[in-house]
Image (cartoon, rainbow, N blue to C red):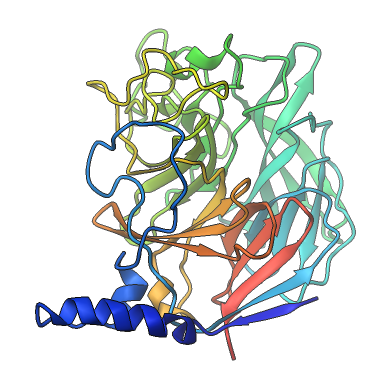
Length: 416
């Protein structure tokens, strides 16, 4: 274990001084709260972008920086996890952690880990596949049901699947595991499965899927007869939710909620507005944060703020088109966003309703301050840890918890 105490007030002194001098020229005063909640500092990204594309509106990228003023503590509470992919709190405060190869661990808030929990079907854990996200059923305390997303491997190829099973009373196995939904079609590769899942207040599931990262499947994100590159909305039995935007339309999968997504790996519901937000990986540049609306087209691969890895433009090389949604925010160079969560605790009030996104290649957690559905400030957390942050989730104790590809479990909490 190691512990890192961060006193942000001490780091802010010089920034406050210079900002205050500028403000006093117009008889304004900069407060610590303004620095915490609004982008009054320089943008956190200062590298050259990969493209010369211009944003569609002010603040769509490279927003001003913010800095947390509440002292907080970062602690590695467990190590040695085997490629963890998701961290999710149980009602009793313990944490569910999936491991890509096909097992589940339960961790206490002090980092004590269970033995691997088994009972899953074979998963395709090549590349970006494996056992992926986990969500307790809304009635978990009585049913003990857990829902999972996974890359299912078959002779036909692989796909993103959603399954459910009961956590046994002795917590050693998942009982009666069954697949309730498959994001067709099958395709034999190991990339862009998505996939987060979460329950809304009505008790139905949102699931995001990738477009499988191949030129043969890329345009499936725009095709409504496939479940590639989509957000789907299903019941706990895996059926389309009544009221979905394409219900009853011939040739369209009725579970589709939105489309035109590339590789979405972050999904959460805003705790105040109830709106659905999604982060997704772009190609070279062009990672996106999107506000998801039913029936809308989010553009991939027709529009994007990124380019091919070889430097070529994608398609026509355009960033906007009528009938396609703009991202609320984008990153160039990339964040490589993975799991994300709106902070719902009250231990650090300045973080309430802020969005925290795990960064993979960027090796940090991004904190975004969002007001009126626009990003107004960005901060980088844990950037000196040198970790690929795979998921971030709320604990029941006011702390945030994060897992990394390197096998660590972090707790981020208010300092004593």
